[in-house]
Length: 433
Image (tube, rainbow, N blue to C red; front, top):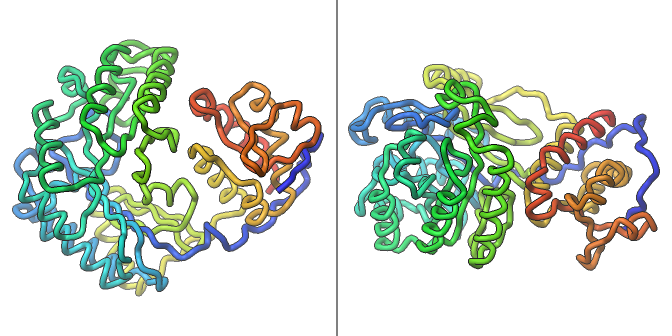
């Protein structure tokens, strides 16, 4: 698609209603939230329930009751007649569940929606929470991808952020993953931890690479106000790394991991060829998905809604849903919010966004509006514009009204300053609705 850069934003223009494309499509992905943890990590603000070091799915009535509620929710949810292509068990610590409980949830999902041949079925696991027979059982139940929450390869930093596992647990977990033949696995790492140095971060990256995971997720610590870190530390102040050091850590990850053969396909994610997270791409492409469980979010038929974050309130919500025969009456997301969500999520991806697809979904006039917003950041090198042959365009090319087919953030600088770029887009484009 060829788009000429306009000279000003038409603030009186109204967005066209979104075309019933991605945001209104039939869901083929399901997220299942398992909130149970042995204890709460110091950085965590997720909806979790702390059950202590000894509670397990096959011994805890609390966990068993929750699994029953999730299965009730799944069964009462209206089916849109499309089988699931991806399923993701997140948490919390899903590896606290018994094999039978994981199988029960997957059986219920299959009964209600169907699970497609070749579906990606992911399960988050924590070191020290599973053994070989458990992992084998998960695999026999249908799990074919696991995400291991390592966070750091430095024992001092693990303790400093409230993790319950040891480095020995990490290496044991990796060995078990290999033993049961789970080829598709991911490791999670966190940068920007209290007292963390650049040398410690680079050592963790090297240790992760040595374990040859097909996928790595690399997150920068966000200090949330209701967490232990939020009570103890002020963002940007010691002992947290400075913004400059945090940026160095991000650049170091990008340089180290791409040099090791990983594709930086999303702002926080790296993968070998063929091992991108299919489920998470549903979110980044702003496609429809089901969510089940306490605090889980759904995006179905243009509606976004999030369940209660407290377990008792979630149980009541499920009972109310049963009484209403599965009817959820939430307002359809306005066109402006769909657009901003699409931009925010899509610009996280290395390939960025197609202006042709944006025009098909939101109207022909929206692409020029976006380009004028991004012009300063294109000149600065944070935003890259490509023609229909995937060739980069210079600011002079765009000034001369050459065709722009796709836009993306540059790597790593555009990704680093993505919040600045998105804030401008949100401020300017919110005037269009």
